[in-house]
Length: 215
Picture 1 (cartoon, one colour):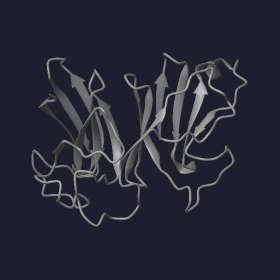
Picture 2 (cartoon, rainbow, N blue to C red; picture 1 turned 30 degrees about the vertical axis):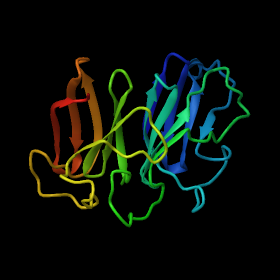
Picture 3 (cartoon, one colour; picture 1 turned 120 degrees about the horizontal axis):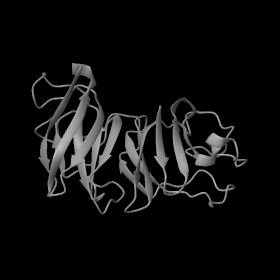
């Protein structure tokens, strides 16, 4: 359901959502000159079938060049994960890379409590130009995280609700500051501590944008 191209390392990534995995191919694949099998994220091998023990749902991927990580949303397990970036010289026998960072609770169940550490149905990712700030389109809100990124890290900011303790699985009344299924996010960095944030508000059939401070 998504494609990310890493020109620096000569790799393109495909979010193969229905098969619970991300595939990584050499860019030479387009010229039919590559004989290398794709590298694999999310499953133990290329013939694995999704089941209750390995269910993931990767939809959006993005490159973090500052930390050499491939970030991906996993909306089934309510998390955002970061894997090591590969290169054309990576050992092709290596597969099922272990995430370097996991944000969110990592469970398909509703959380017992809503906190700044909780992620629910993430669908979009965007970085500031220096890769210090990560925006996550997360169900009916947008979360902001700041580097250094660590496992279980709490978001430092949020759009869409007044409090992290609010149940974000239920969309609020439509307004200029609310979202209903925030499916995508993009950040245009002005490189002066601010920038314009765009949010695809799918449930309300609109695209919202506004200036935001990232310092």
